[in-house]
Length: 50
Image (cartoon, rainbow, N blue to C red):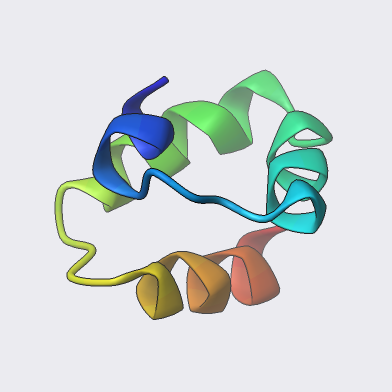
């Protein structure tokens, strides 16, 4: 929900990748989201942690 608020038009591929994260990864993503300036930051985080 936070990601959809920040980045309204997430691709289905990104949404699917996020849905596949563990609870711990989702918690870490929620914290990291505070520092994201763009969707590129989200993609880079997912490449490193997903």
